[in-house]
Image 1 (cartoon, helix red, strand yellow):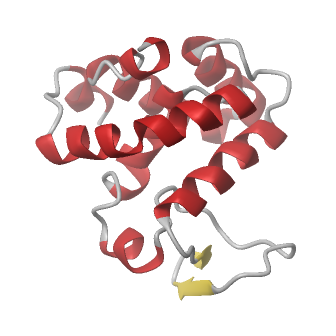
Image 2 (image 1 turned 180 degrees about the vertical axis):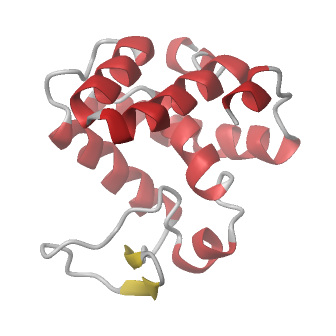
Length: 148
């Protein structure tokens, strides 16, 4: 699957998603240190940039599961319980702060260091996931949103 991303063209629906959410993602990146490109790459893989039926129903762009501390509604899916958000804006906010809180030692260091260190600290099961994020950022030139 990684090789299929390497030469991909950015679908127009993804471009529209990136443009629609870039200002909020930049603000969150400034506050949390999580690169915009990382947020967008995860959105590509987790919900096809909000196009999946689950994301449409729940506004959960990043497939974030419910936790004991979550006070909101949850969607019961075969893979587990997933958060339901009022808006995609809320989903972005939650995701950026979740990554910040879980990766405090790697924020504010640039996208490449972020994904490589996230793979290292996340263990081998997560290493392949973060390699996919790196390939997606490179293939779709998502680092453009980090420096724009």
